[in-house]
Amino acid sequence: MEKLVECVPNFSEGRRPEVIASIASEIESIPGVILLDKVDVDHNRSVLTFVAPPQEAGEGAFLAIKRAAELINMNEHKGEHPRIGATDVLPFIPLRNTTIAECVILAEDLGERVGKELGIPVYLYGGAARSPERRDLARIRKGEFEGLKKELGKNPERIPDYGPNRIHETAGATVIGARSFLIAYNVNLATEDIDIAKRIAKSIRESSGGFKSVKAMGFKLAEQRMVQVSMNLVNYTHTSIEIVFKEISRQAEEAGVEIVESEIVGLVPADAMLETVRERLKLARFSKDKIIENRLNQRLRKN
Amino acid sequence: MEKLVECVPNFSEGRRPEVIASIASEIESIPGVILLDKVDVDHNRSVLTFVAPPQEAGEGAFLAIKRAAELINMNEHKGEHPRIGATDVLPFIPLRNTTIAECVILAEDLGERVGKELGIPVYLYGGAARSPERRDLARIRKGEFEGLKKELGKNPERIPDYGPNRIHETAGATVIGARSFLIAYNVNLATEDIDIAKRIAKSIRESSGGFKSVKAMGFKLAEQRMVQVSMNLVNYTHTSIEIVFKEISRQAEEAGVEIVESEIVGLVPADAMLETVRERLKLARFSKDKIIENRLNQRLRKN
Image (cartoon, rainbow over all chains, first blue to last red; front, side, top):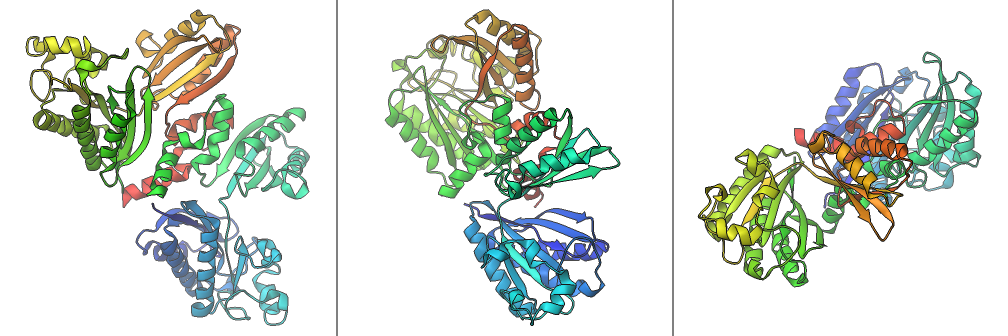
């Protein structure tokens, strides 16, 4: 019955809480929108997470981008994380009874409106990208706000998908798109040997021949005297938490190192835990149909 | 926002599918009711599972009891499972944004209506019971339809909570109540030694000093050449699947026996899997708040 999409806009502001509160209140002004999370990440950057039926999600996203453009001046913004705009990136994610295709349409409609009504150049990325190069966020953000400002209007490769072919003086540019649900998952190892974390990360990430839809890096957690394999599972139906945990366990054991703990950063759908449960309990004849919440959603979809 | 209760009526009919289909169609005639499951259990008995907002659940339950009374004649019913009526037992279970207390009120309202409008004696059980003795289903069903028919009107202990103090000639009597969500969970062991299953079952069930809210029995699965520890976790917030699995694993290992598999019979809430996931993945800082479905329900509750 009820269609729900998730929207996770990233804003180039992490030091003035009143700015993020003002953006959040714009989002929450739309009936039917549920703000799930408000995180000041490091690097002078904030991430809001909200859920709504598709139309309301698009409306909330527009108001957020508009307010961010009023309150954030990219010429005054500094931060380590790559960014090109006040609303830097905004993905729509299918959550319940919706598809990536519906999220692509949302991204296109929003992009067009942001370009026209706010005069902000918009790039479509991820599932909404119109060329293979633009699937990749890093590539769109190359040179960041400062670099893009110089290139826009000159370099044909930087022509936006919507809006003017010049930077918005204060709000910069915005990347809008559609993607699958992303799980940020970290595994911490009881060693200070960063090479072990890097080696494991390399072996499991897709880009170096590892698991499909897995991004991974090795980090040092200096204070805790541990190292971390930090992952993004960009499509957990391709590679699950259970699969990466098991492989990291295996490699850690080989290296004679213990897993201290693992952590899911942010939110996770109930479905993403199924395989772990099945494995641990040697659970036979268990599918997502057995979870009441899923059964309910299925039946609601039928109606 | 949306309140949902689950209702799991048991009917004394398992051989005439048209009877169960007719009862199911009564339930589904109420807008907002979702029929989740329709199971012909053994012993000439069927179980329907449906979910609805409280008022609709009560209405669907009433129509089901009415239709069952029209189509099932207890004088002609035979089956091994203890039963006293056409609709033998009907519990309401809090599922989303509802409490046991609200389910007790539902049970009382339905009981009164069934007694008055259908002339069927009704006993309240479980959380809705008005005396400690009536918490227990087995005790209410003592003597079954045939025995109750003789005792009603004579034995003051059998006076129903609602309806006439005499049996309904064809529909018998009905037990209505409120209880927590029940998880039917079985663990199968690679041995034919039934004593091992019985010993483990005895050690974990509450009635012999084991875990709170756990019922357990040991069975032989002759065909599969295994034995089974068969459990009802009558309140998984008291004792989780993970706790009983771990204890059975420990005792099985002590006895030198392997666990072949385990099985959840019927449906399970996403919450009930949390502890297993936390344990397996050494998951730090993980709570049910991190599951999107729960976060959504929390926020909806606030609105």
